[in-house]
Length: 373
Picture 1 (cartoon, rainbow, N blue to C red):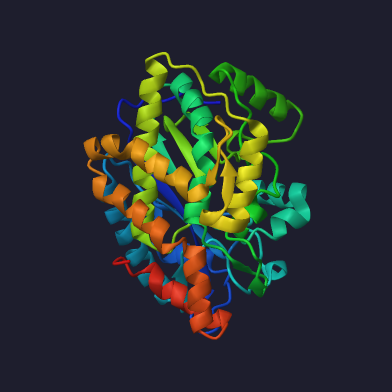
Picture 2: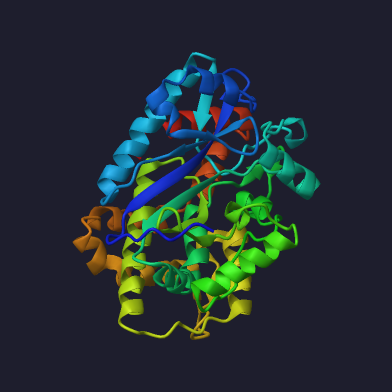
């Protein structure tokens, strides 16, 4: 594992997993190589491959403010969509594809993705699951471990808030986040063990490497994990939002919360005692039912709604978000709770479209480039 790069400011960066569809049929199209061939050298540095040829990942630069982050995100989607249009391909930001056959999706032809395919078989083949990753800079590796442990209590409400994948394999799955179901079929994709120190994490990694369970640090696919070369804690909780404004809200909450917990770490505050069983149960409730589900607060044992837990997060982070110039984005998080997550919005839209999943997917492609909502 590489050394941890120290960050004195809670910087922000994101990765988006976007899927590619045919403009006429709205079916997934394995066009990543053709898209890559069109990109100019500078923009190509922002785009990389993912597991399947119908997916591409974009990466932003590193920023101090949410405003800068979402501006680059919107600009990046716009530029990329223009390249895709030349190939009769549309770009879509949503956590799943509603109807394309997962059995027909070819893998990217490189050694690591072939290893993923061969080692995980059927589970990897079904992986039409597209997420958003948010990175926040921290000062050192021990602060990162503390932040990882503390942020577990907010992971499932943030999943519920971001849920954007109700349709898969030709129908409504009954889940708010089918992406989470698909992704968490893989090993090492939920909560990391509650490590007491960074060396303990490194020892765990080295043991898995020796056993042949993983090939590199990136195979630790936990929903919250440290990224030593970047000096960040990475949050892999979210379905990718169709709405860039929603990305801004999620980034504002995460940035402020990380800054708060880092301060608590350096002040010597102990790690919270969070009940592992409640965390697991709450994750299921968020994935299945979304914002209005009841949950068990993992430290106090209170039974409250997931929406109430989110409001507590907003209240906790509001002063720090103001200091970080993200107040308006945090305010929008409260609006999202009232509007519903994008899984709710997809279901409402699909009803308006008389259940036509092809039209739904085309509308999601349009909304991917509508930065006003």
